[in-house]
Image (cartoon, each protein chain N blue to C red):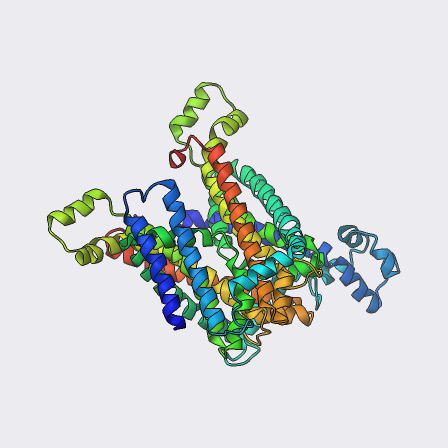
Length: 308
Length: 279
């Protein structure tokens, strides 16, 4: 992205951060007022019950003293941006990556399941797409299901898959990977079928005049032509795979991974932990998509299809 | 023996389908509908045969007949879950997210600068695991359907926003100049030219969002819900190893998802009949 494109994007991000920062006060007003009262400050309606009658904003207006305190609450309803940032910083950079308190450790647990699932799902997806393109029966019978399945909330299957596999003795990395694979599978199938069919009649005819065999047609025309479609679906697939791995951690009471971190923060009343896990997952997703975009750019440029 | 029967079913289904697919009428509507149905029936028949004859425990994979029986006998319960999760949670959130996205897109559209900023940021947000906000919303809004609607609204907001902002850009200078020569101001141009031109994009976003809405509503229930709802039923039935119930809920989810998507595709067809892709 050029410098010109970055400034508007940063403005929008800055605006979102501003809204977030402002919202911290009304969201936390009641909790902060209770805490401040325990610490010996006089609050304007004395009884906590009376304070519930007021909206967060009016309460903060009545007691301006709590405004700065709202940003440093230990267990806030809405953590402030700097609290989340500092939690991210301490759990990523100051803890050893092997420690259970390090977010890098949890990121790796989720990421390994995501990547394994992504590789499985993509491989199967490409194979099925080749089958669909070259076999008319398969095309007619499987393709409608592949498209319909996109409208189904597949993620709802996650808890059952975990239990099913657990019942036959498969635990750990693989169940999560299977959910990831399942989620990244369909975008790849649909994208690759489109891509492998993208060469037009003229190009196919040209190969025929060269008397190219069907396998040469695949390797020299169809496969290269499908690359832009493949990368588009890979980017969709990898973020779906990450979501799959995270959701896969939820119903099993997993002890490591982003999903487990979110659950722990939720159950033990540590919202900052949940928020940090959420942002950790977001950063991971962004990095994965960015890496794929980079590979896409390089590959396409080398193939002479580079974005201008 | 069991495997032979399963193989025979597969061979029969495949044989019929390959005859149909390579036959002379394979592109007619009826046949293109029939082939996937035969394929589905083949799979279900194999599933039934393998699971019942191999005595696979219902805790691992219940046979389709058991799921169907469960589906029929617990219709009232499934309907209550459907009402709670889909009608209250997903649909409310979907409409809220859609209205918010339309509003922001129209506002952003008035400034080139904002559009340039919102497109990359929105596309980025759409790729994030927003489902993770579910525990936060459940904490804020309680465990009833309001928190689910909020998760859904946030999930559907970005895809719809990005598509609408991109769609509103999709008119040529020539078309806008023509409107100007007619003396049309901002609102007539918007209503008569730019919104109609943006409709294919908007529907693309709306269709993507249907699946997201169901996912958000169901997954958010894993974090806390009243004792009704599809996500609640799935997670408790998994705990009780009542997998036939889980599958029945998945059938409901699949039907609801397809119907929701189908409804959007139907509206799209009616509203954007003029677009090349619909002709």
